[in-house]
Image 1 (cartoon, helix red, strand yellow):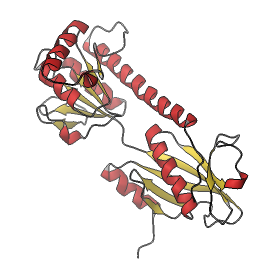
Image 2: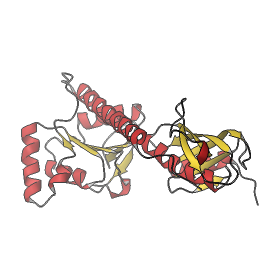
Image 3: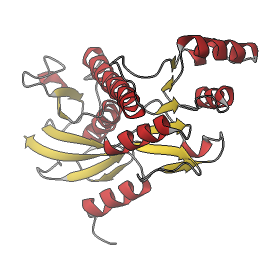
Image 4: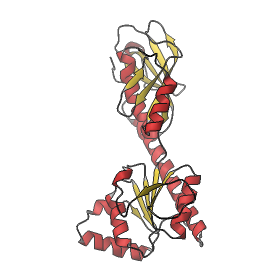
Length: 276
């Protein structure tokens, strides 16, 4: 059997576009099978590749790893004997998980998440659409444009109105900048996608009229709740580059807001259950 190499595993997961966390044993106390410096990877499915210790540690790592992927923020956790736990967070901010394992040891672990950047999918081929693509790529997002739309940045492509190949999720965004070119079809495709947020370069009146037509066509009202129109923050933008900047500023604000909300929810959620 080939020896385990954490860096080979990380490289393979990154190449496959899979989210994961690198987990490092920082410190141990008393009897435990974990060793300081030991590293492993926990994937988005909860698979642990590498050795961190016994079941009491691995169960905590699976839960904390998923939480780290949801929030996008690294964290330190401690797995401690249940009889020694007086709070679910230590004074230094580390999350505490109770352990029912007979070893009685304490293990401190650093969990560092990696996930691909969110996708910004853009409908349209005009100056605003191209400017959003350029700004988005510069900001480190994964950008997707329809086939044939000119763009200097490296982008993903989709055919027509079909976004299924992008597997958009709650972290991703769709910007409808069609500006008179198949607006209704573009908006419907955007709202039918799994993207968490949809914005449209259009006046409130125009967007409302399009939404009415979608409702009359059978779209659920809940889907329309993801739409923000006009797209972008009100910064007095006039030309396409400025409008694109306002759209990107709004997307950044949404992204950080979602991360902060996830972290706040973790802070008040139930932690520290018996894990072994």
